[in-house]
Length: 322
Image 1 (cartoon, rainbow, N blue to C red):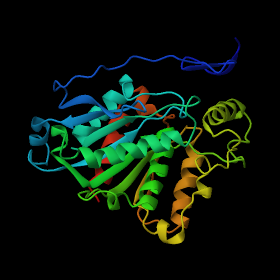
Image 2: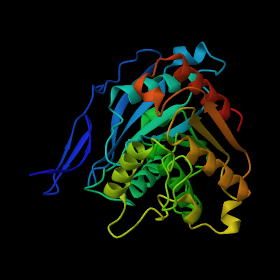
Image 3: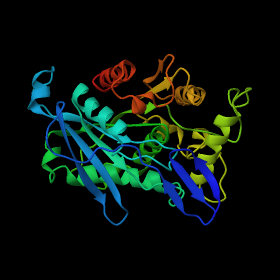
Image 4: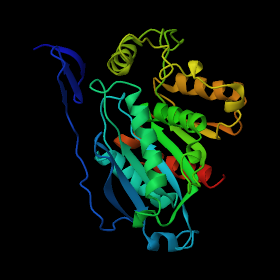
């Protein structure tokens, strides 16, 4: 068998369609409190192997913050990146960053593991992640860890491909009118936090056509080729945000958005374009925040860095401003 696609150190796809993934260090589940939070894994849908990890700040961290220990907490639903093909909430970088984020923001974090491409091409990741939102509504009064969850203050977030998923899940929530499906819902998506979002299009941007960009373009094209539906190109709605299936009235119901970009990230240009696109659609409360001199998903590779701590504080400020 020959290798037909490869992300060195992370992924190999072979000519017979088989896939080999190389997982980095992971954090095993434990309900014991440490570093101001506890965490556990839950099953969202056993028939589709959709799981998630919940991070819950403990009462001591609430006492040391400005939030009373008995106060209901906002909920952050987080979608990991990895070009839709790799990644897991169990990876240590995600685990450390999101656990710390739950304490910093005094929020409950639900980090979702969705099915991966190329075995499960888009829109499966979008459908799986929307299923996690439905699970939240159904489990609110059944899971003791969600007793302090304020679903009327739910936020969607994710980095890279997870930022893309954040956008798509928000669109589905608007179009499906989630709470009309459940008698006791009270879930409202108050805002979106996209970190270094992964978008594309058939039309190349200036940065993608610049000298020295060929390697980055090839890697992005490889992930899109593995994840897009068979027969689709990069103007598929899941890749090109300009083809999003929303009417003018629906854009008017789009929640506030903060887009985080990194100064030396190849995807920075697409993130800026996304923020400008939302503003052009009349979405209110669109913010663009740049981490100067930082690379793509720096918070995953070094979750305890000064830049990662600053990102957590910026996320907290956005969440508590709404």
